[in-house]
Image (cartoon, rainbow, N blue to C red; front, side, top):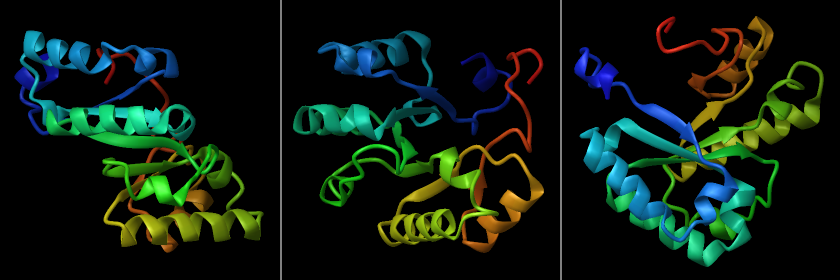
Length: 168
């Protein structure tokens, strides 16, 4: 919220949610309470959950995700491709973004299989109207392949290492 007040109202902060946190029956209420208490606009918050977390109790979790989306929060599927990857569930999820796991990105320059998987995931996501982020981009070569495959959002050490809020 401090960054929002300091003149960055467009900034969206992504928060990784653990399976343990998400399993709590009070999770949606807690998120709503934090938004209310902080005054942070919900569209400035993105929650990232892994496929595995979402699929563990899929019907219950999809309902919780829908409630979070109704609050105006952006949802992202993190580490996509490493979990259950059920396409029937993917189309039911209220997520707006998937994040391709770095294990695929790190093999892009040397593995035709990794390149084919990333290409297919990007195509599938775009066809479903989802944004795609490639995680773990560490080299100029990985970035070049990702761009060539049509992924426009990337993150990784190539751009910067984790840092404190003050350093950011």
